Structure formats: C-alpha cells, structure tokens
Image (cartoon, rainbow, N blue to C red):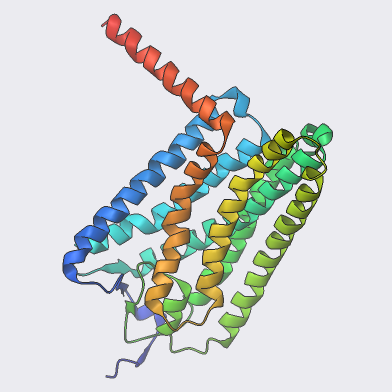
Length: 320
C-alpha cells in the first residue's frame, strides 16, 4: 500500500509527533531547555495568581483579568510542554488519537480565549485612562465576569467546531505529524479529504476572532494615546503609558507569532515550529515577568507576601 493510501479517521489509533528535526544527541538539550522554560511558566503564572488572590489591594478589574490571563497561559502551555518533553526522551514519540484530539481542542480553546481576554483588557485600560471617574461604575464585577465568561464561551465554541471538523477528515496511511504538538496545518497535510470546506470555515472563524479583537485593541489605544497626550505633566503621561506598555508587549508577541504562523505560506515547517514556540511557551513565560517587572503594585504585593511568609517561618523556627 502507498503512503498516501486513504484510511478512515476512525481506524487511526495514534499519531507520531516528529518534533524538531535535529541530531538525537540534541534531544537532551532540548528537553532541558523546555524543562527550564516550563518551570518558569509554572512558577511565574502560579505566583502571579497567588499574589492577586491574597493581596486585597489587587482586587481590581485589571488584576482580575491578569489573574485569568495567568490561568490561561498556565494551562495552554501545560497542554503542549509536558508531552513535548516526554517525546524528547522517547523512542516512539507517539500520541494517542484521543490524546491528539484533546490537545488540539484544549489548545484551541485557550488560545482563542486569550485573544478575547486581551481585547477585554484593552477595553479595561481605555475606561481606566479615558473615563477614570466612572471606572468603578462601568467596570463592575458583573461586567468583568461577563467579559471573561464570554471569552471562554467564544473559545469553546470555536474550538469545538474546529476540532470536530478537523478530526472528521480521513487521514492517509502516514500517521506522522511534522510538529511537536497536534496542530492544524500538520494534520491537514495528512488528510486525503477535500480541505476546501475546512479551510473556508477556519478562515471565516479566524476573521471573526482576529478582526474584532484587533479593532477593539487598536481603537482603545488610539483613545488612550489621545487622552494621555493631553496630560500636562510628564510624570502623569509616563504613569499612564506604563500601565499599557505591558499589555501592548503581550499583544504584540502573541498576535505577531500567530499571524506569522497561520497567515504565511506553509512552505517551511521547521520555521513554523520555531514561530509556534513564541505563543506556546515564550508568551506564557514572559507574561508574568512583563507584568511584574513593570508593575509597581505587583512588586509591592510580592514583597509583602514574601515578608509575611518569612515572618511566619521565623516564628515557627523560634517556637519549634
């Protein structure tokens, strides 16, 4: 039978994740690199969530969104990194059919949710800077919960549809996915089905996700820049811009990498793998660093938390 022989998707029991095409002796180095980055992701995002939950001064809409961003970053990186690390040390490099479906669905859910959440965070900054006197009224707890819940709902609907259509395809005899996780383009290369409908639906949903969120972000920042430039003091302008620069950095990295990955021709698989690292591992690692290093409130909350824990440990040591 030829390698392009058609087989029904229900007959596929597992896939092979090729990963990075490097010499075998470099797999240990890649494993250690992924382990280091994933450890930083765990520490950074869990730490950020703990700080936000335990410091009353961070009980604001901005930090409510930031806590959810850390939660999303933590989970979608956890969908990818552990399996990739296992495969660096494994001979088979296989992933079950159910595991591939689950990975595909969860990653789609969290990455789309993050896109909508970043738009909600841009709107939050717009209200905080352009309408500060009405901030607590307009950005009520009810609205914040609705925005986050709506982000998850959009992510879930999109991922359910995309996952069901992708895995309804018939795959060819080759089960080898040329990537380090189950992604759209590598799976489409294995399909013997007509991809026109799937590509049209994917393109439509991408437009419905990307354009509204980008428009909200751009319009919000146009109003923010216009308002900030009217602030007479240099210190006031710097303070206003500092609250937005972290968010803009996160948006730039995420949307830049995703756009490069999915809007460029699929002719260089290895380059696509490197680009996908930006939003699967690099962004979740950098987000807590960006927001903590450039945020005075977070740094003060971290110092207080560390000081409190140190005091408790010292008292336990004294009375032991």
